[in-house]
Image 1 (tube, one colour):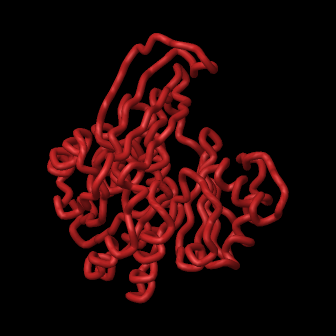
Image 2 (cartoon, one colour; image 1 turned 90 degrees about the horizontal axis):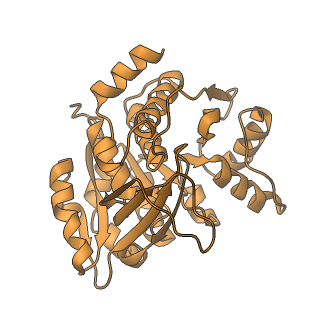
Image 3 (cartoon, one colour; image 1 turned 180 degrees about the horizontal axis):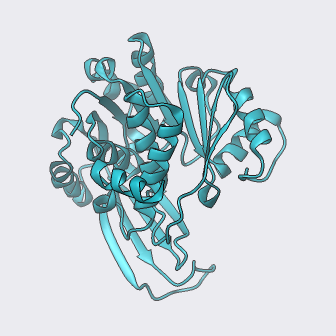
Length: 318
C-alpha cells in the first residue's frame, strides 16, 4: 500500500441492491432475476473503498440514518479498512438504491438519498483538518451542493486539488464549478451539461466527436476546472486540459458482466494516479483499467481491484 497519498471523500452511503436480469424491465413488467446482491454502496462510499484498495489513505464524511439499514455501515468500513470516524449519523432513513443489470452488463438504477440529502455544510466543516491535509478532495452528486462547496472551499484555501463527479446529474451551481479542479463525467452527463451551457438539447457525446468534446471542455474550463474528463462507455474516455490536444483512451476489451460502479472505479483510479503525479497517458490507462476490471465482475464492493490486480491487467492488455 502507498501511504503518501491522502484523499478526502465527501461521500454518500446507501444500502445497494442489484438484480441480474436477461434484459431491463419494461413498464409494469415483472422479471425473474438470475442473481441478487445487497451490499454497502453509494457513489461516495464506492469512491472511498476503491481509492483505499488502490493504496491511498482515505478520510471523508459518509452520512447514515438511525434505521436498520444503517447497520451495514460499520462492518463495511471495517472490511474496507476505512476509518469509522467517516460516518456521520443523522436522524431518519439511510440512503438506499435499486439496480438492474442485463445480460450485456448495461444497467439502470434508482437511488433514494435518505441521510445523504440531509448532510449539511457544518457536518463537513468539522473535518477541516483532514480536508486541508488531503492531496485531492472528491465529491459526487448523491449529496447536496452546500456540503460539497464547503469542502471544496477548505481544500482550495489550503492550495489543494478538488475532483467532482456530477452524478447523478443536476444543473451545476457556478460557485461549485469555480471551485472544481478536475471534472469527471460520462457522455450523458456531459451532454446534459452542454445543453445547460448552450440552452439547447443535444445527444450524448461519443468517441467520434473528439472535436465536440474538446469544444465542450474548453467552455467548461473557462468556468473553473483545469481538467475535464469525459467517459464514453465502450468508446473509452477523453482527457482534456487547457493548452493540450484531447487524449483519447480506448476502452479495454472485456466481457461486461456488471457495469454498476465502473464509473466510480474509473474516478478512483484517476484520482489516485493524478495524486501520484503520473503523466496523463498513464493516468488514463490506469483509470480505464480500474473500470474495466470492475465491469468484468459481478457485484461492486468486493469487486473493486487492488493495485496488483490493476497492474497485472495493464501488463496483459498494453
